[in-house]
Length: 235
Length: 235
Image 1 (spheres, rainbow over the protein chains, first blue to last red):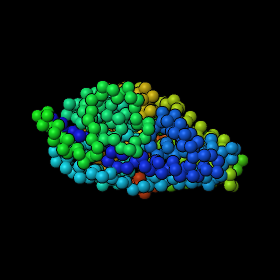
Image 2 (cartoon, rainbow over the protein chains, first blue to last red):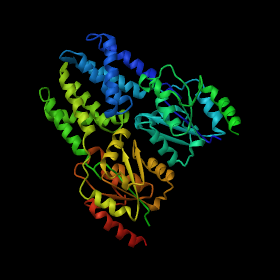
Image 3 (cartoon, one colour):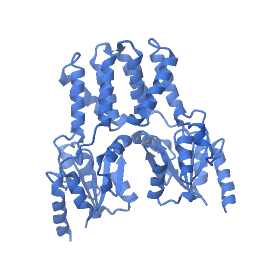
Image 4 (cartoon, each protein chain N blue to C red):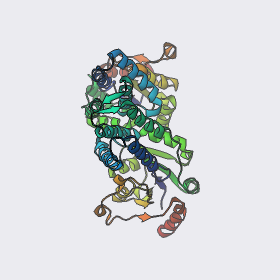
């Protein structure tokens, strides 16, 4: 039987990637006097991925990559207000309201009577904590973990710290790379709920997925029924 | 009797503020064609403090404030290589070796045989975890907590989570505002070890300190002897 259901947050419980998409569109517009949108998008993607290991995830890291892209886009000099506009994008993103996805609230309330619910979110501690406390759903979770990376080792650490047996643990998320594969690799169960906005970096290569056993749902609202069916199979 | 000794990390166990001082000097030099060093330092301090509530602590936040300062320092346009130089400062800081303060290693080894040692550090999760894993002293700690802010509530959360009684808890650190006053306010013990490099923002107003009961040591090497004397008093 499952005791603990852990949820990813960004693009599983609430919108995240759309804020980045809007920011990317804004950057392309801001840099349009210097470069084509395609160039800006490609360069920003490159900078983001290559900076991940030195900056980590989150809006501040993303902003530093936008600024790096801007400095590369211009010939020699850049307007000071262009830099200010990019910083404004960051401050707007950091202050944005949390927008819950459909079914989030109802599903959590429904499951919280039968399961110990946990939040396991990757990213910047400060930014994630702000979103959690603004989300209005933090009271649904008995345990909250913010991690810098979602690796198999990090999941094992979390299970150990909270005294959870891996066979009693189920993870739900929209990222095959961060929520599904590492949990499956340590012997846990995982439910994949694809989100059309998932960042390309969260998508693993086809060969990484092959053989991995996990289930897939269309949306979060299907989870209570899925859990009921799973418990019947296990019980 | 004390069971758990918790340590702050930045400027208590290892150097932190000196890296920021060097970065500030570098920024003043980079912006010297536009402004006097005094102007740059004052503006950067202002931006850092006013951005804390939207960015949080850490090198990436500091870098965004440096870039904001640069955009304000110039008249209308800024050299792209000036922006690149500031980003280089950030990447250098993020990749810097951890420099332990005098007495750190020996003190931790000495105390770890009698006490449960804990690390409670404030700041950016990704940056702090990198420093912890590079420090070579992470094995001394049974528990590690990275928090976004060190408030009384946050300390209470930590004690609750780890099932530690406040009368068995002692916190050691260089920041009156973050390590000493919040712990004293919840009824815990605290040992203040001033560091000449402590950031001005970590220094509380005089009236906040008045009446607060804590002890003060000159350096970390005095802690084992202090603990022995404290246990004699308590025992």
